[in-house]
Length: 148
Image 1: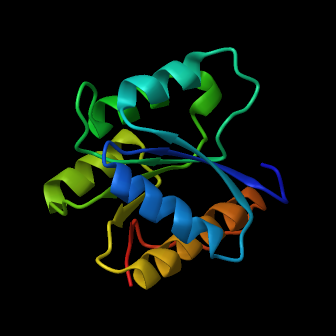
Image 2: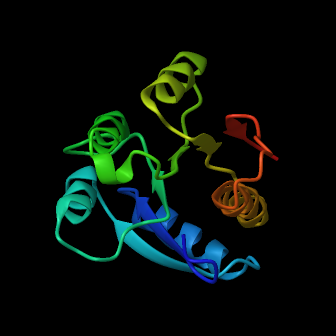
């Protein structure tokens, strides 16, 4: 993982949520580059392309048309080059059975979309700090569900 810049992929069909997310990332003290996808099909097309740029972390909404987050997660985890890429589920829903299933499928963390911009900044900072620390082989392991 690049130590100075984290390459973030975000797949979310809601354009307002994508803007909210990208704006919040710009305000945290971790340098990022964001690539946005409005559906899982476009995300998967990018991931399997010959593109030299790979994500350091993928934020994945669950409820998307054409290909939902569950399908994307399963397909990404079948790609050998992304087996260790952190995938953070980023969703408004919060159902314990779904969360358990996502963890079993290989999601790294679960982030419920917060109701405020400041909460989002705090949560994104927590998530990306965890990702940076994990890349340095530090052993701090958070709860699977990241919350305020």
